[in-house]
Image 1 (cartoon, rainbow, N blue to C red):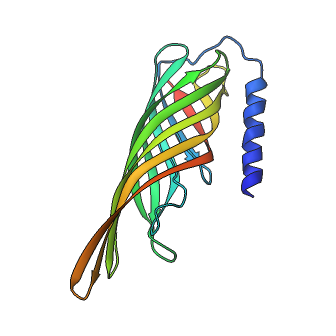
Image 2: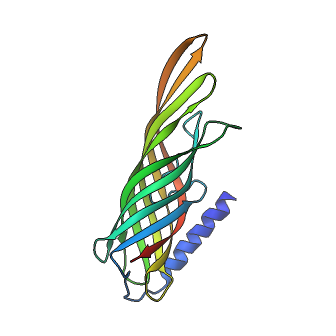
Image 3: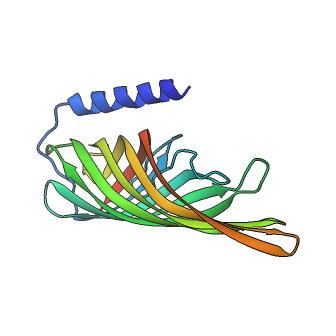
Length: 206
């Protein structure tokens, strides 16, 4: 299942990248984007770590960003990501926000624009408590991706994009355990790299 999704995204990127573009550009220097990450996905604002945090699992839900065109070939993105944090099987998930910044460098002009995307995000992992323990932490993610943006209207104000890339995640998780009236605290650092990440989204320029 995961391989079929990956193959579909590779074929989509290749198809969009080979379409001959016109010389048209985005109409407007400002825009808004929204994206969702597929399983093991990387969105413009959020990186998904491999399951390396032990007692908790972080999964990507969605992200949105404010876009500023800095010329014909470069775009600055300032965004928010929405993540779901699950402490374990059968436990209720909690949500948290991630803040991030990055940029897209477009490899060619036109209605169809391949691009390279680089950025970072910061996530404060919410405190998760049960009867005997409390877990919290934070994470910084460096993002990199290759994608294709294609305008879908004649005015060149609405664009669809698809991208694949990686997320390098650095952070720490602090666990406080209470037993017999005494508490102990342990901190574990993590560094993970997830490849094959993918996201789809849409941008509106004005």
